[in-house]
Amino acid sequence: MEKTHPIRELMDKESLTCLSVSHDWRSGRICWRASYEWDDSISWADYQKTFTIESCLAASPRYFGHATVLEMFGSNGSEDVRKEIEELLKAGRHQGIDFFREPSFDITFMNNMHSNILGIRNGMHAIRAGGIRRHPLADPEMEVIVDGLNLARAMSFKNGAAEIPFGGCKCTVHSDEISMGDMERLGFLAYCLDRSRFFTGPDMGFPPELADVFHEHFTANITGGKKGPLGPTGTPTAYGVYLAIKAAAEFRYGDPHLREKKVLIQGLGAVGYPLAELLIKKERCPLIVSDVDEAVIQRLKQDFPEADVTEVDPGVVLDTPADIFAPCAMGGIISDEEIPRLKYDIIFGSANNVLAAHSQEEEIALAKRLAERDILYQVEWVHNIAGVMAGYEEYMHGEEADRGRLYAHIERVCGEGVRENLREAERLGITPTEYAYRKIEKRIYPDLTPSS
Ligand code: PHE
Image (cartoon, rainbow, N blue to C red; front, side, top):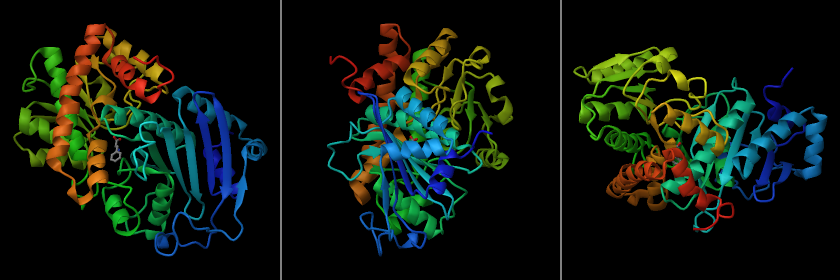
């Protein structure tokens, strides 16, 4: 039988607290390492009080090199898993993954690293930026790894498009729900975050309060708390997506006003809800909404009793025609199979990785198929990026973070930047997705593309 959590099994069986794989996309070299670095007596709530990331936390720490880790995979019957991970890193040109594990909590913290090139000389503790999201333990581990790697790759490009000096990564925490009062588990996550040299912001599966608790007790490598200077990042993200939808409408219909346009929003969460609010307040356009949580739809209807809001079952979203489709929930929803039945003029939303692809090449191919069906789409990291822009503003300026500067930045990137992306792609006769990749990849893979 296929193992559902092979890395967890291997780490627990071999008593590993840390496992890491690094990959150099230039040479194709892969290096595995592992270690045992903390005993089970440690109290994670004391992180930054009685110990820091430099402290020795085990009576007998142990470190293992590449050859030994390969043997461990072999003797655990997990060769196929190791190879699958290596193939994923190669296909996506990723830097690697660091796994940190606390068996007493059954938590695996995964730092999925795509690239650090934009951040290596930024002078900060963090050289990468990416959200932190949680996957329930019921999700198979490989699904969590694939999600993290795809999101990490998107973050490299997102940070490049946002013009911020940070590489891309995404943190996936494989764990049962963690209460915001659970200082032991939160201390462990904060310790792993600080060892990973990225700044983060709460993503799916974590509330904004995570950032508040981390700031108060453990680390400043997180942004987007309720008590933070700019608040949760969903609101600015929604504003960027809203501007991008208007730019797309202008490009497609010659008019940025959306009053007559039916917009279908999948997911009324941290970004979908404020996006719906903006569309109702500023455009008064008819909305079709869908969410697995019925209560949030009722809340929208109650907040805006005059608005034209209809709802559809989450199972039939892709069968529901609309002028504009804004996916704001899970990624990977559109593959070759769905494309023939989609009835939209525009697909622009906030969800990361809407196209079910594992590499840039696959993504560009799917985007082409959408274009053949006359659907205007661009890879979403061009416009769902105001969350990390807000994170950047807060990370760099702390309490002096400035909303006016942030919103000017958003207007430039999600307004003018999107208009330019659509215009230039049309001029070159390629999809906006391909144009966006061509533009940013020069900076992410500088040795791959001839300098121009
Ligand atoms: N979670 C955000 C996204 O997916 C990115 C982010 C990173 C936000 C760091 C804040 C801080 O786009």
